[in-house]
Image (cartoon, rainbow, N blue to C red; front, side):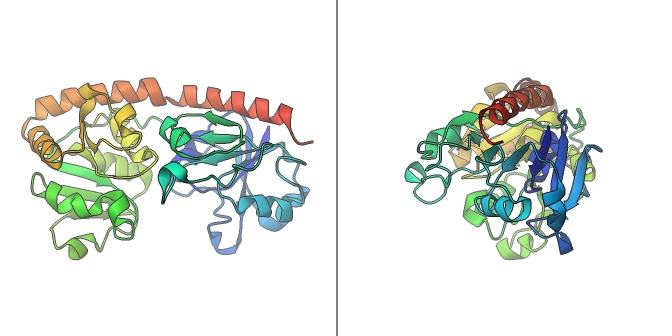
Length: 322
């Protein structure tokens, strides 16, 4: 198929475009949020093509993958076709609901012509999806390889915009965790974090993915401090690298991290003790990291992900649009 989608989520899109299709990604001047084009720091295959937004009407599109509500209007204006009616479409929901989470109604809830694809069973459970037909396609991740060395007795954390997302990302908890083990924080807009929290963290600002994986794998343990997130792909990537995991037992993390792969809990005392234990016991950390990698390969492998998506795309292309 020839599939139109927006470059919204780097790691998810990287996995998705490794399928056996042709992928069109819109491009706008300045590479803003509605037209970033191809990724510059992630490995994308040659089957992904940038198309200037004002040339999309000349493209033969078989299916549209929507990821944000306003993309419905973008498809109508840029492609000249109505998603779900003139062209088959699916909507991928990456996020857990915000606000009154159990009662939050999804933007697609009133439509029956666009399948709603959740990336976790937690999201499917918590969103009010109304009459939208729903399915769950769990994440798939391009395997970065077992690169763990754990040579540095420090914990690694990956979070984008930790200051703006303080409560959601658990940024406010980092000083508490930092008292148990030295922390290094990777991601976008992390530079001002030590000054904001008045605690000495190491920060690595927006490294290319391969470089980030190499640096992260040198840390002894991976910390996932998120209170509320769908399921951070950085967590799965850390597991694939072979890192042991310490995570808050919230949202989908309780499904992703088996007991042998690390420690998950809602008790901060339990989590800080686990961080300290992994940092002090390299052999235990290495063993838990091997279990984490095996679990991630089994559940979040790229082959399963693409096979599930091929099924969804075939059903959707055959069931709506024209």
